Length: 617
Image (cartoon, rainbow, N blue to C red; front, side, top):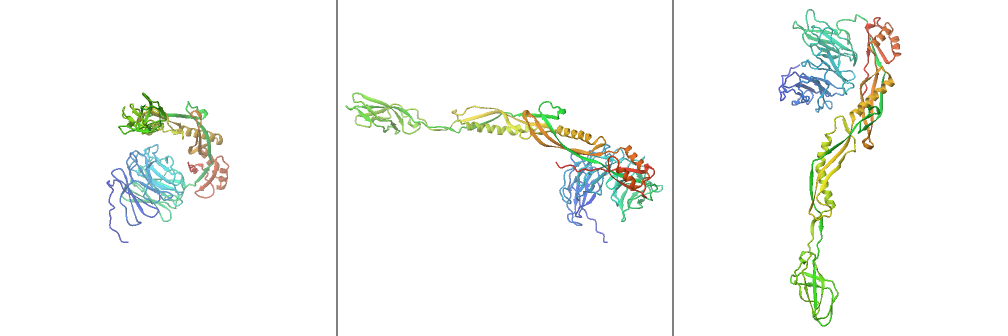
């Protein structure tokens, strides 16, 4: 094989602070992770398998914290990489690919920390995949014990932290190293402060852990490094560690998944019991009331929220118009003839040229000094018809008839935007509401507490208004102004209290149906499925609740079972166990032969974890 030259992959914007961690994507491309001096997780990846590499890219850092340790990387059941590290807040943080081998990553997520905090920030977390694809993470707490947390379903949510204890009379001085045995059960090794190598393992693949056991030390030598474990071709694990003499030491399993360094000296049995479990679900009617709620009546609190705006104002130009009018005035007709004369209506034009008319016929008596005065009117609408007196002064209409006018008045031109219409008031009102509504709704929303939910379709905005106008419809004015405040209301209810009440009701139902020997596993999943507004602010809620209850075996009960099946054949012990309360199925593994040990102390009773997939909401 020809050795290649070293090639630099460069560095992130921040200088590399900690050693790298490498993982392989589902398509075979490698991906490298490290931590920069800026406390950020950086990564770089092959763009083509076995060949080209990308540029460095940040995965940022957890919110309000820095990355402190070398990251651990695991591969989910669906092939997505997931990276784990410890933050400066002492919590375990992880981030994962959105799809196998793809560049996009989800946001950081915290799994919190054990009851004993993750004190040894220099110890990176160790990650392993169980036989069913579930990831499991291990770290060391401030109590010197080993703690672990695991996915409850492949690619799914995570359990709470649990302690695996610590080696007898020895605290852990190295980060844990974990490897999978040939049959799939995980085995974990650490160094102890006594200089020995210690290990602990799953009693069955993916479930249940045994007790700590020491692998001892090399002759007259103490181990002073973290152990490293790998699998031989035949499936046997082999561990390597540095000794105080400066040499590399190793030890190995004598058979795949078996003891280290020799055959078993004591017969043992492992009994794996699957407990009886029940999935329980129900729907509960819970009422939200605006008065004082009575929990005994399944009532929770409801509130009518109210927010009033500041003062707003809007002015709208009037859209109504005033029609034009004709000018009117007196026309006096004089008759100088010796006989009366009848005059029909006609159009007269005086010195101003403004046409004027009158209504006829009428008769002017004969002279002497006979005259008739009638009302004349301008032919055209407008102020131009307001002619002065004697604008018309002369003969008219027939021989002997003269006419003259008095002053005409009342003529007016048409006026646009002169009358307030109701539509103008409505438009100004709508503008004020549109101006004030966003801020009022925002103020209303800020009143909703984290434990509350809004009752849909109860928003009224505005519910009331204190708006005034400076003109009424029909007023002669060029504009109308509307000003004032609006008030918006909405109803909310204590959703968290309703969900908690439903969970408590389901627990009471489980106790009644299953009895006190059953305990809830995981969490009760609750949800509001219907919200039905009633009268007077009352809201009826339909709340669903679902959970799983598993039969519990106390330590005394497990000892009692071990005492009963000691020295039984494997088949007889299995038959006996299946008759016991709470046992759904039983599996027995013997170190040798077909008979259980006579000493119950060598019979380990393991209660299998019952996992339920959470319902989809």
